[in-house]
Image 1 (cartoon, rainbow, N blue to C red):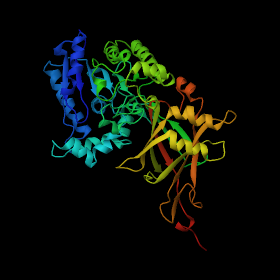
Image 2: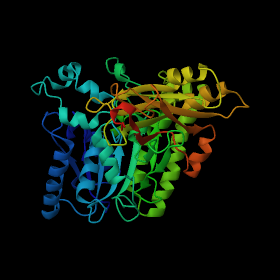
Image 3: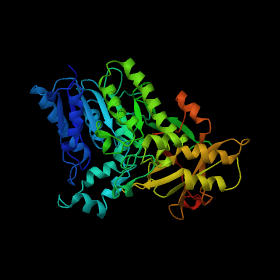
Image 4: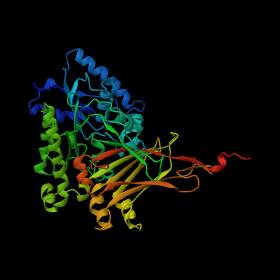
Length: 476
């Protein structure tokens, strides 16, 4: 008999929305007694993600004790449910030992935030989502969901990335197996279309859903011209998590496998990958799914280069080709060498071996599509970078003979008349380094690329804090 399955919803949702997924599973051989629908409070302002994780442990342990849940069981989560599951697993089973979950199937998880979280905290969010809940929208939960939140950063360091050592995490060959499935189609309804952005499903960016994150520390404090660069350790060893991007699913339809999409040949693909994940029985099969799902994601991107196939596939409602662009998310955290936050800084991208500003202007207008400053901590930023425009627009502008690279410089506003950053004798001093090469596609395949498609990168940056001469001096 297949393992039991528990399904957990996202923010501002309930288990009622997942009856279609439950019915799909039953139609594919899973018994009604095997499927549990979890509910939790998500729109009360005092509830944090950590609170739900704590309560989740008590409920699951009681269900196991009462014989309602058998170990191991599988967990399917949607949107914010991904953060809840990771919080629960990481808090109570930090090395994966003893965790009752084997397969963690994540549908459009907001692993690294959602651009809608800021909107949810606005007056629009309170009117649209909070009118039937005393105008509460789940403020504390939205703080964790906001792009570049401290919560997402800390959670990733607990379960995915270790900046300094070789600590193990909860995911691995004999531990929990995560799977991530996300759509790249925005909402179709007229009202919801106002929140659509390219490279996302209407609520969650593909790059924010992918659990295969990258971490790096950049230290300008020792030498601003040659900063120290240290990649973070991947807690799951060499294991990469299966990740699939589907071209026909938005944030709502991603959990309704039986729902027909506008592309008949894609309609069954969602159900297929969900069933593939549930049928995975070994580490070898898990690795094979990672490879197979890479091809699924590549086939989604390939539609961009074949307008005829794109039109035929989607018939009357083909997506805008830019919806199929591939993006990267870069989350920066800047501190000075005393550990204090740097709240006012600017990152400028440019070709390092070419004069003129035309390419830099193109990068900032077309490649760097969005920058979000976290509302709780301005030292944290989320940059949304169009990888497709980088490769097909930016690099061809540089010319065939030049080194096709992207460099970034960081400058920070001075603190006052007595303390500056980088150089105490120069206003506007900055540090810089090369962050991407045109051949990064090949490096991605080798696993050595610094910046990767459909990926969130956590970048911790240290810059030198320099008092000017008059702050202290000796006189005869």
